[in-house]
Length: 492
Image (spheres, rainbow, N blue to C red):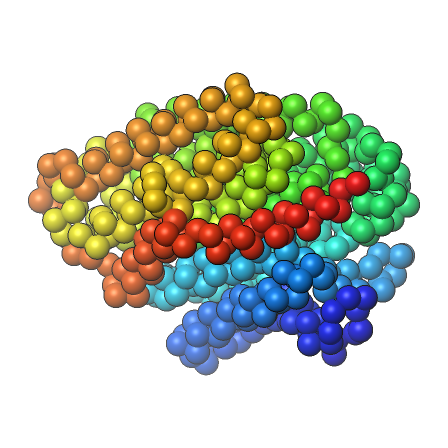
């Protein structure tokens, strides 16, 4: 039953509760249903992921009208489980749940012949449900709880293959992100003590005229950087490539690393100011992270690690937009989350088909796959064009808005440096495409056929959306702009 909230109708409040509650609770049905039928389990996992997508879409008219849907349940010790749906939360929830649904569909055939399938689907759905909890949390305590649930589920997903080498990589990701989360919790406690509450709305009002402690902000930012795999916490993400490709797509494109940038937007754009020091430090850290990871992608030979370093590099652009302080820059950052998520999921899922069919990840041992995998090759290229920022693909407009927003915010040197990083993106992705698809194959043994119909359909759909995202960019851009106006208007 949905309790009456502060803003919005009972229907909207039920939608908000379902967006979080259905996948979190439903995830634990996966092992039980899986014992009876794999097909039913797979379909149920897709349904549980599409419920928050449908609920979030249904909330669009309300949030575009400038309203916030709010529900809260009192808990012991004064901690409230509070959920709120505004433009920012709904935008992020739609992006995450849609891409997760495509990844779940792709998983049906990819995961079909592996062990531990019931655990896989449990963790995939729990992962998405936790992300919905982070998107819609209106209190720092449930935000932290859901944050840690994503660490737990990603740990099991990265360690899906039980070999010792893979488990160690999963442990590394878990320890890095949990260490950052503990630092973030200390920051949350300091902010809560300063404001007298953990409710984001109360914190915003109480600290509007009183700057938050620089130490508290730094602790929270450390947790954000660890989760978003930003320098100096970036190394766990390429190592997470030992996971199945749907998992790496989920981590890189849809959910895990985007949690960090979402938390930055929610806390330091919509609620409190990070302070003068961090306003200067964040884009500088983002630039260093972007340059270092782009350099690594230029010399790496493992296909999934190249794409992983690309993710680390592109996250820097999002931080640049969010820290620009301009309406254009922040809107571009939100658009970047959408366009990068779609395209990067396409790249990782394409890499999954290549790896599963050839059993090779070293690009020096691949080649000529455009002849035998034409749909995969074209889909990969279209998604790569979007990540590169080639017009008229969706990634071009988001990258343009971020860099232009930085310029309008007076950060000319940073804008020029990030534009140069954009050129490096073109270089390493063309290098990757040429090595895998165009150059002469070193051995006839790797000349194999396309993946399954479901897998190929998934990557083709993401490729088409990478194109459509540019041609129809005005629609997500307008939604993003309304969300930005709403959250930036809250900062007094």
